[in-house]
Length: 563
Image 1 (tube, one colour):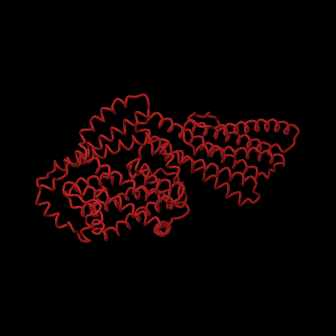
Image 2 (spheres, rainbow, N blue to C red):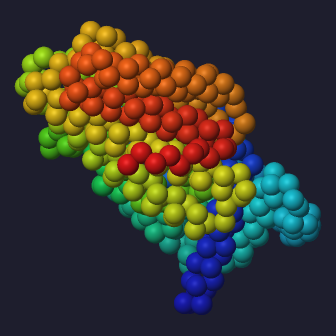
Image 3 (cartoon, helix red, strand yellow):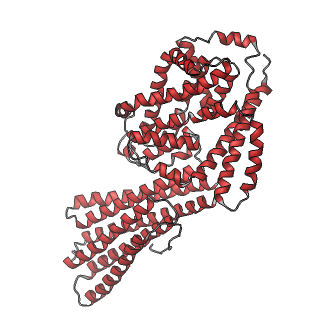
């Protein structure tokens, strides 16, 4: 068979065409799905069983198990989901990625692609110039769908013609009933192929096309098993810069796939015989297309059904396998792993950023709780630990704000829809306000420390007034965090506005009362200054918290000067 360098380049070009079409289609459907995608993501924190459903649905929608697993690792890294929940999501992603194989099998060979791809492009192009963003999103999906199958058509023409080359068929005939070592060799080839093309869906599609051209099903099935292992590399690479929890999550994904491949390599001939009884067909190539797609789906589904009962054991083994290097390694960070490994598409990246602003909100809330403890604490040793923790969290918030800003800049390098652009600006505004909240709390902590050093004591009335405004700040934090967990856009922030109004009214009353008490020397001037700074600062926190709620709604808050 004459298959030279130009033929190889043609094959690589066709594969690139196919992957690009998949990318465009994936981005289009994510933009069109919008809020529905976020609704699916909100179920992540339930349990491993709903996690399987979540992983399946997300991967079926975005047509990328790599995107799902990288996102899952980053959520574990941020402390948003547990290892058990992440295991369920990754298992579901393995089933979701089998959808591509059926898409290629059912449409790629049964329908004359050129008969509908170009007319579909003709319909989509005018929609791209529509003023309605939803129409543009669906147009992008249709264009990607057309390009995907035009790429598949090119792929079918570029792969070696095995059927009409007796010498190749004779060579492959030796592997039509491969032994365990031969199976492992083709598992390795499938793994390498997936690592090279960085897409298990593309590798699977190429394998289906090769089987349609005469590649023995036993070889194709072994390659598919290797593709299952190859897809774990992306998550492992993403976890390299993560904490110990992220590394354990990626390890669970790898173990799940490797264990599944191990038992299937042993049972492969019997399993293929079973599938041949499901898809009997007169022509070998036609039968093998369906056989391979069925094999992929059944194997991944059965592996999930078996392994889901052993998730706690996988978690324990991963914990022993990946040993923590200390407290820093255990700390949950808001590190954007989506920028590593497989590139995250715009909608998924924004969802990830939104999830991590929720974590940012929790950190500032923890700082406020520590501040209240510091104010009430009499033991200097305990006060010092609380001050140090507040300072540590404040340093973390500086890093978080910088990371989020850098991440959003990378997102903005892609073509953003109007809706996505508003969300990016909202998230930037939110992180700025939350970082200022952290700065104010650190400053209040230092004010309290200054008073402790000078052995200043508040009167009972001062303590009561500070407790009143702090209680309102607690309510403001609760309202803000509830709003952060809601879909961005038009929403009711009436509760947050009511609390903000109460904080402003109370601050005005406390200021007026403070001036009168100072005149009549109700309390020491130095303690009075710290007391005033505390309730003034509390009101500033309230301003920034309402700014966050307004940004979630799509309005951008006031840029108050508090520094």
